Image (tube, rainbow, N blue to C red; front, side):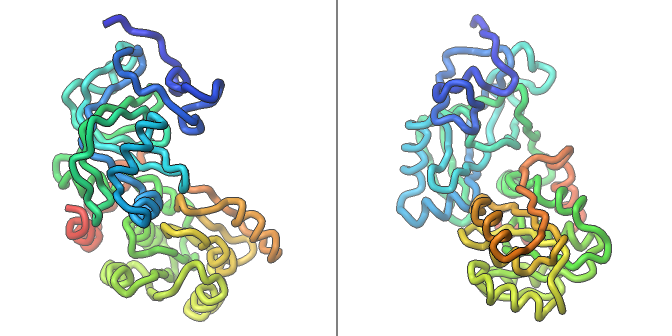
Length: 338
């Protein structure tokens, strides 16, 4: 097969609008008859849909049918409502001549880049796992020269590894932002990213960690982990109530907040609970950065607001190492995803 020359960041797969990169594109070219020198083609077995997107689709009906429709229309799994996607697991089927040092045919890998920028062609949806937010499929996808991915670890169940790698950027970034002695708030502390971030904050030397969850069941997981000093059951969208409860528990506003919630309107609760000069790390695709910026301005709160970036150097290895070295965390992930 004759190879074509591709652009490093995947611009050659953008159908419209011209000039943008794949994540911002309206439609991508998922025609895999054409081969490019800097692409890795993957036989896709499973999609791990991000929590915000899955919850939104589940509320509307059949998740599998919605994914098929989105991929057929856009050439990628890019939820129009949440703007988010997820990541994939599969086996390397083809490696372009320019990237042969990166992967070998037959390797099982998980992508570490969003489905919102990944050209994807689906033959069919096999099954939908409502508990794990994972979808078994038959199809193919393209990873670009710039796309990060991880080889599946031999010592962890695939479902568990996929769930952890989906949020692999969160814990390493929390670990480098939290300083010893800080008071920390984790909104959504019982979800997979919340559990990892709580464990990372504790290991980084936080003096007090307050967790917030919207249900007793989710709060129970966080309490069992033991990284949070206090776990509150509250609605993160009720800014006044949740910030009041957090300040009562911590004695004052916190220094650092990480928001891992998968529903809208949690911005102001995080802002109200964080002191002037403190930092909020929004690791949630439900976040409206317009609401966050204008809301902070509206209450004259001078906080540093960090957009959650799914990439950090060596983030996959760091997150899997955190799991392996924290027995209760590993047990919780095994029970939920293994």
